[in-house]
Image (tube, rainbow, N blue to C red; front, top):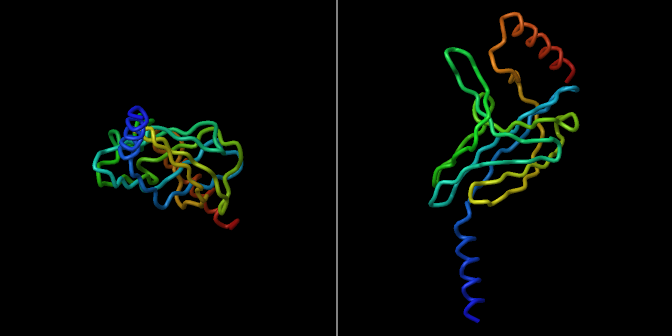
Length: 168
């Protein structure tokens, strides 16, 4: 009997120690045909008294999900993978274009506007959340390279963007 009570108390304590992360405004970026990668964005709100971190993810539409950040390095915009995305106690962390985000690598299908995908988030306390996330068209391109485009590349990208916009 004492073992059963100890087990129940341990389960209750471990459940109360789990993060209380609320996910708001989650969406994935729609991509044109032939694109191998996309990104997902959201706001993570931690309602717990202790900090927690997003440490991993997975999706039904990608081979792999990685945590990434865009940063300025000597005037050059760079993207790099990060080990974790911190969410302070009673705080929030915004994942957005040009900042922290989730990369969806090795897309298994084209992501189209108004489509729904599944995204699982894994936190440092081993809690998990499975989300159904809408796919949205995001204006302005997040080039999937490590350096800013040259003026010629930027002009070409703008022309391509105008072409895709006229297809709407």
